Length: 317
Length: 308
Image (cartoon, rainbow over all chains, first blue to last red; front, side, top):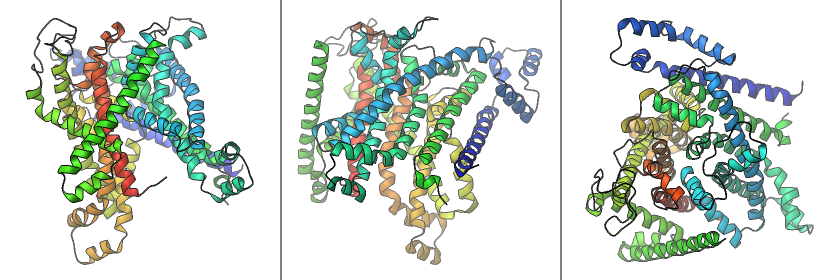
């Protein structure tokens, strides 16, 4: 077993530990609830008998650690419990929606990552030019826009004229091309929101390197600016770029919530928002756990990949 | 094609107008400000002066809201979705309330709630951060690990989880957002203070017998102020956006209180009919965050002496 594998294994263990603490937090937060969930569900008019019956049904008469063990072992078997609002198993509610959310996030990532890398390299290549300045102001503004503003501008601009549908409901069994067409506006919104940050970091990482002696050497050899940046600067700038890409993919996961609501897209975020309004605690717990797990996983991937991209970190000894 | 051209034209007009506004504001300010401040202001780039002008404008609107607004915040004055007229400058909303008045009160409510939340997050985060750096040891370890765990869950998701538990109301939203944002402030305050506590003058102050609070407030705080003030601006933007997002989702500021995020949600149907009015509250959010960002950008640039 080489050092690399040990490093990955250590990071993985740390990730699992974080995830464990997060499940404790998500579960424990509910226990801090001052009231009695059974009372909250049944309302003030409930008789003591129905209250006791519901408590037994929800397992509220057990001590907290036992409930946690039941919950976590259920989750590990893919069973998230039952929704309080409509009594359906949560795993059934979530399954299709999770796939939809992942599809949307992946769609946005496939557009955003290459776009921001190319824009970042171009801005670094032509730094100080009008192109660079325009992109700089544009990205600084789009970072500070709320997601729903971007979404509604796109609806106003592109859906008004009938180019794209403003509501992204997907009929079951739709072919891929239609799915891509119907989810184009939400994907574009997410792309615009994350591209700015990724592009600025790419540009900054490359420009940072341009002052180093080996770049000067390459220039003195008579190498063209494009080749200097793509062949010499880019490989060394990979670590920060990978980091910011993964961070923004993690950001996509939360950004997806608002965008799904705007476009009435049947995803996990929409389910979560609806459940918060209904105070359907088990569903919110399950959704929060999935989002948090994806977030931790992406951060872990960023950590491992950026270490692997730097030989000095891989062969430390 | 025509739509794209018109869009580009409007964009160009907006950029030029913003530049002119920034220039005028700077010109006026440098006249009336005392000599010291005037020299500083003259060095401000156009984007920062534009940002300052916008911030001052928002403050005026927020303070003078009851006198500017032609109608009351919750007053139903006409039919639903009436078009703009000389009486209702921006038409009426989904319940027949005057949009223009709602917009003004919405700015007042959202900005003040965002400010209170940021101040709270800062008070908690900065004090704990400075404390952790100063005393170090197990208190530092404990606080840092707690913050690590709290930051392992994405902010919006955590806010939704906590709001489910405590229920949706303005007070709860302020507390939840302040708690989650104070973790970010804690990280920065601790990192900044870590570099300060190792300096000799802190050692001297300790030997002189200064107490913990005096040490933090009188010795460390002044040196940590510059990055913390810039962070306050950025945090305000994030909090402002969080509040708008939660209100937009229907989980933040509750009706009938006027608020920019929920105004967008309530009137969103108008967009599909080609009306711009629902975009205005969203634009008002965006304009303020852009303005604050411009000013913070300039402050950071000045503080770090960063020249590219």
